[in-house]
Length: 350
Ligand code: YSA
Image (spheres, rainbow, N blue to C red):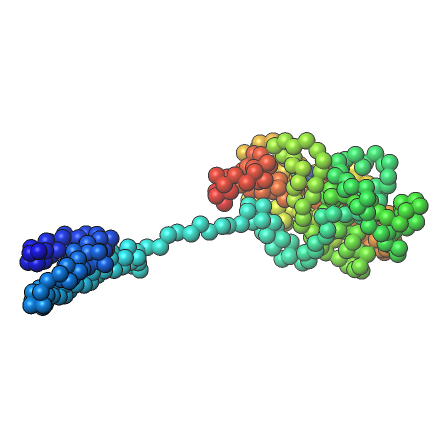
């Protein structure tokens, strides 16, 4: 066995090794249990003492040299690997960061906030009420008893018959209670007007409130009607409130909201909970179509009575304005359904 030839061969192979796997193979080939150098040691058995000593010594030397070369190569390969890993994991802290998408307020929220600010600056408090209402607050207390044809104005989403809540013993006159029943029928409120009653039951005049909130109607949708939309209810009660107060407040509100002179028209109308009643239509700068904006009127004495207020001592006006309609005029949007479409191409414009 030419030990020098073996050493040179091992050296060449070690130098050429490109990775740890290849180096391990070389290690096994020369230094493993059945490797070439181990085999040399086994072959010593049959030799004379002298030859054994000589060859043994030389083989040991070559063994150490090959071991040393492999160790060196191992260090080199591990160093390379470490470098590659560091390179891969390197973070350049000076690079500009990724822009995170930041959300923003929905146009209806923007309009609602602005409207509330205007009314608050005019001395009105903001009050909220439940979206799931009882038949009493949504209809009866507003002077719309069962079988009254006016109920058809408000196409109603009734909730399942067994989802009823107990009659309020003190608040609902006997004639309005469901006969032989301890329960009130539930519905999704069709307007924000029930909150008038809820508020007047607990507070004594003079009152000035606005009530923003979602309303629901079981009706066909079109460019200006949704089954879910927003209204803002306004109620002012005092000793000498008249239609003139209503007109002044609404004109002041529209002037501040649109920041330009807006054409409005007042039409006589009918709501069971107001007498007289009217509706206000509005049209933008370019004299387009009239849009119905709100329903209003002087609070009906029966409504005061249902809420426990003496109509002989107090008068009030109330109105319910469509916040979606205001937003449509403000942003020149011709279809209310866009607000609820969840279409980012639309929403990103605000
Ligand atoms: C009237 C007199 C009062 O003393 C107080 C309030 C009212 C308003 C009444 N509660 C009411 O709901 N009248 S209304 O049916 O004419 O609706 C008022 C406004 O809500 C409309 O002028 C319109 O702007 C909006 N609206 C009604 N239905 C809508 C709607 N907006 C979008 N989609 C719908 N389906």
